[in-house]
Amino acid sequence: MKNEDQLSEKELTTALRRRAMDYLARREHSRYELQCKLREKFEIPSDALITSVLDRLEADKLLSNTRFAESYVRSRVGRGYGPLYIRHQLRQRQVDSVLIDQVLAFDEQDWAEVLADALAKKVTDIPERGSKQWLKLQRFSQSRGFSPAHFHAALQNQLPSLLRF
Image 1 (cartoon, one colour):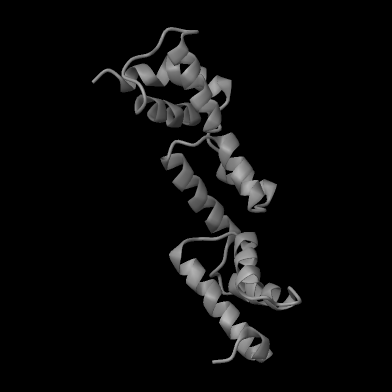
Image 2 (cartoon, rainbow, N blue to C red):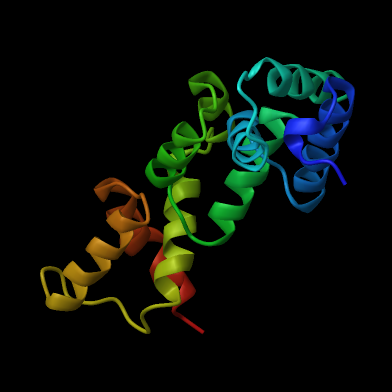
């Protein structure tokens, strides 16, 4: 079998597309992620070939930053992450800021509910304000990408109803 150096441009294009589709079959990827993975797998001197393959995948609607961003947000919200964390991760994957704003268009109450669900898994009762447990939960919520306002709303409005059963 030929290695990448010996492949014709048509064979290389086919190999790139096949590999990209293999990655996309597993999960959605941003265009940037897929470009990096293909660059790593195939040592090609020019990015023009990878760009043309990715353009074709987008034209065929197999690659979509919008689908990736929506999927990523659903996944991270389900795991209890907040808007600051998710925004940062999407920026690292070079998703457009306007698209990020669209997929993170939850109201503050929704984010407080997401945080309350995550906190309910960690505590059985609401700690006293300023206690070590309170501060620990506050640090946890910040590390998950929630603002102090989300934390206070979650503890005041959402968490009490989750702990009543």
